[in-house]
Image 1 (tube, rainbow, N blue to C red):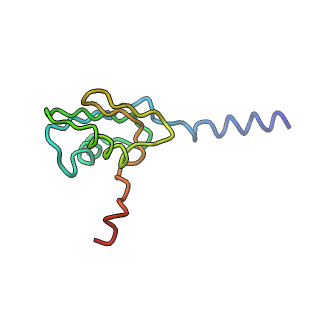
Image 2: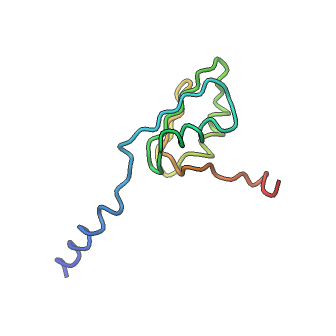
Image 3: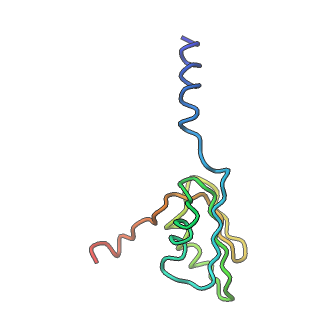
Length: 104
């Protein structure tokens, strides 16, 4: 039974590996609607990459960064906002849908 269990672990372990070794860095000069999506598509970022978004404007607000984290970040992993940088683990290559805009 023990050998069967260890054999199972060896077979499954490559399947559950994550891409958290890769960094998806996005620099945003001005707030726009698809800045993060464009950066993710250009770089070929995938789920579980570390996402770092640097905001290069003087008025980078923590409120906007929290909004972006809600659309792009996993919430079972660390998420940090330091200065004008949002750092988290990417949830998906497309943003979460807003329920208040469904059907519009």
